[in-house]
Length: 616
Image (cartoon, rainbow, N blue to C red):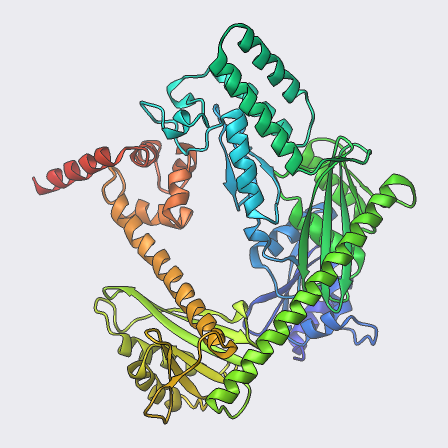
């Protein structure tokens, strides 16, 4: 796409100040975010015709239609703003840690009087300590289980209780909610847990050993057994961290490997000179990128606020080294150095991380090739069995979800070359059938809305979740919209396939790749639809719940929904966070906060009392 003369004129007249630039496509979507010391020079470099320009830049500029700039005071502010905008918009052409928003962390709420420990997939600037991200959620659950067994730290949301819960009786918590342990004693347990999570050997096992022996001498055998179990749990945690002495203090080592457009980064975690573990991540949109650009992407997305930052980060190359060191130093509160080693121990560690990244990349490449061969075979088999005019390289599948006609929604999922293309997924809130279930009418509406859109790519095969009736409801609308793609429906009962123009159904053999492909896209459409339906139903239920809280009317209810999005987020909010919502008072915030901490019977009384008052 050629840039208009107006956009080119805008580029020629940009400021020479530092800032951030955002390239947008013709729909106004942000496709790339970058930072610049000199905005004019940097942005102009994109519009010059340069034979040496990277293929990714050429591809990006073929979709670019406009550019927006944000001026900041200095390079440091540009770096921070760029990182924020990339996380917010996840542009198509920026390097991204794959699915980085879903990686789990261990969170310790050290800002609370009685901290709790649990797994989270979100990192906030809330004063808590975060450990991770981890590539394996199973490992996180195992560590959490051992932490609770060893240090008996609470994991519950609220301290409002009149008796200890089951976790206390299982010896997984010391019940600070009912003051079975002092704040000072509990704080020491939390400090020990944090030390273990940081990989620090602060004599935790030795102290527990001494406490166990002292308890045994005092004939307190139950307490001695408790210390014994704690020692066992701590040792298991340390063993799971795969501790190997390598020397060098606290550092992380970033090793990259790339091939055929795929990039893998291996991050070694070294604490007090011991290799505690390693995490492996894939990088999207990383083809033809330099090692320095890859390092910048990881520094931006891995070391988020609240995550532990070591004193040294070992890398092979880095852009804007001083700016990153200042940002990380500010985050840690101590000096942080980015080191590019030339020889010695750190160079050996970097080489080891890079070698391991190459091995893992090759393993993933072989797995990817195996999966590709498998999915390609399924696509070809499906075309053959259904006698399609061409390979169904783009398949679209639709499903409808509702509860007795309430909050009726539809999903469209797309498979390209036999694989989910999640960036192409769409969801629809249906307009013509609210309040009464009518799957045929719903399907007709969704077909009209989808295939009335001329800008979307045409499918090679359309799959409807349902039987012959759903197929007949969809076909006229699809054809009226000018779409000539083959249409089939897949009925769940015996996995019958109904095809346009055939009176009888096709029964595909079980466990064949073509049936598995159809089942996969059908099940994915169902998952996507029901997830959207549940989110809307949750919003409706949230509105219903808030109706029963004193001081919460329509305006405050709407403001709360806009601030917290879902019920879990609102339940977890503090009084201060609730009071900060526009239109909320301190009293209204306390009413919401304490309502969510009532027992079921107490909530029922509140609801009944309000109903009685309204009926007076």
